[in-house]
Every structure is written in C-alpha cells, then in structure tokens.
Length: 272
Image (cartoon, rainbow, N blue to C red; front, side, top):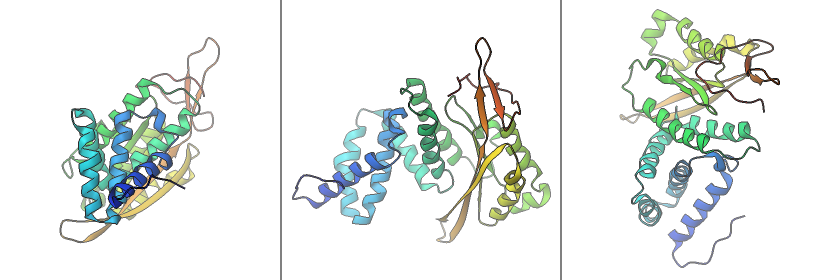
C-alpha cells in the first residue's frame, strides 16, 4: 500500500502515487545498477502511461510539474527520456528494455553497483533506439549486436514475406546460431503481421537445442498510421552460458553442457 500526504490538488496526488509506485515496484533490484538518468527516464515514461488513465489534465500536470523541470540543464536525461519514450511506444523493441534490466538485477546478484555497468545501461538504451529509428528494410549488419560486459544480446528481425519466400529460414537461423556460439546471453527474434509464423519457424530447432535454456514468446499489437491493428511477436531465446575460472587460469566461457565458445569481443568476467 502507498500512502501520500493529503493534498487538495487531485492531479498532484495521483502523480505522487504513480511515481512512488513505479520506483518501488518496477524492477527495484535493478535500480542500483542503472545509470541514474536511465532510471529517471524509465520513471517518467511509465508514470506518464499510468497517469494517462486519469485523463489529459493529469498528464499535462505531470509534464509541467515533474518532467519538464527535471530535464532543465540536464541534456543527457532529456535525450534518454526522449529515447525511452520512443522505445516504450515500439511494441517490438520496448519489451527488451525491461527484460534486460530485470535480468541485469539477477546477473549482478548481490554485487556492489559499478559505474561501468551503469554507463552500459545508458549505452543499451542508445543501441535499442538506433534500431527503432532505422529505415525499414535497412541492412544494419552487426549493428544488431550489443556487446557489453553485463548486457550481451542480439536482435534478429524477420524480413518481409517476399524476402522469406526466397531465402527461407536458413539465414535467420544462422544469425541466431552465430550469437549462441559466441555466448550471447539472449537472442531476440522480432516479427509482426504475416511474419509472425515465419519467426516461429526460425526458432523451432532451438526449442530442442541443448545450448538453449528457454524459448519464450511475447505477443502484442500496434496500430499503424492508417488505424489498422497489427499483431507483433518477440521471441526470446535464452542461451545456456557458463563462466569458469581456476587459480592461475584464464576465464573460460562455455555454451551448453561442456561446449566451449570463443570469448572474443567481451570483457573477461569472473564466475559468479
């Protein structure tokens, strides 16, 4: 239960309750590891969405009394808040933000927060935003990889039906396998509309792959510019990654039971 001081202004009461709820209840374990500006941006975006249910007057009050004053003279916060709002509106890339930050809390466990990890969370928002604003059909190449020390994932976009009919699932499966062999923690396969069944076809072999811990689907919808509603699908492939190190030995990264994987491109981490 959340308690707030009595206030004659109903909008102020709702705003105080919304912000307190989000800060306490949304990925609380991850907060110490996030860049403070990332954490504040997340509060702004989620509070605005929550307050929308109370009507436009409450949202206007929130923007005027909380959001706008907070970003004055804080260019990085202003930039991250804008990007976070854009990502939250993207029903394909948006869920990845909270999913990865939630896993960050699990991966970090009881470790003391590090500035390096906090900076990485800001870089991760920049990375996802760059994917969100890419030109449709643009070849992003290795730009779909995020090679952090704490966050390490790959995004795979399933192409238009005309492309899939020509190339089939092989290139997309190869993209997922490439990430698995290189010990990426997670791979996200994204699709919308008619591409959804293609995405499921792409990940089908990985349901039975010993290197994979779990394959999970997240289904949503979005409304296009013409008012039509499209189904969207995020398929998350969790990779079985292990880190081992002995006295006087170099760290070894393993994918799956006893299968070695190259650790190039990532920073060595001690086994947790």
